[in-house]
Figure 1: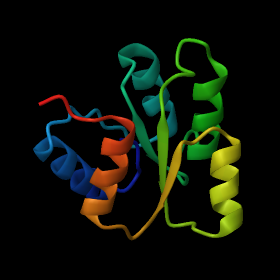
Figure 2 (figure 1 turned 180 degrees about the vertical axis):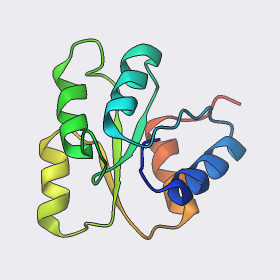
Figure 3 (figure 1 turned 60 degrees about the vertical axis):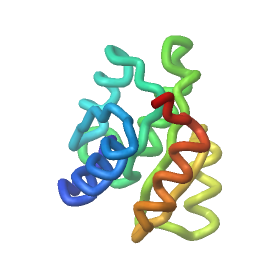
Figure 4 (figure 1 turned 60 degrees about the horizontal axis):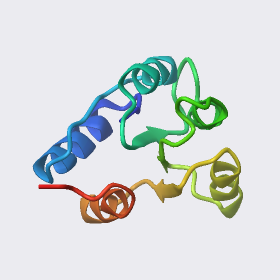
Length: 118
């Protein structure tokens, strides 16, 4: 989970940990990319607006590398126009969730891409 807003990171982490997922957190795009390369997560959730490397650049870089191209991405953003969603899809995001979102909707979308095995 990469978001420069600690409250959003906390909300997502609590909800997903309760559902049985292991969470790695980053507050900027560069740290998130380092985690993605080194840890190879099953899924990346990230905000569009982050320091260092924004979510769109992150998604593009992630899917440009053969080592990480298979990792699905859900963009979580306050930007929710059709053009924003289309841009997210263009850089390779599998899903786009607009803030504010319900924790139940977040969990549903995560489980669609990465079912829990517990």
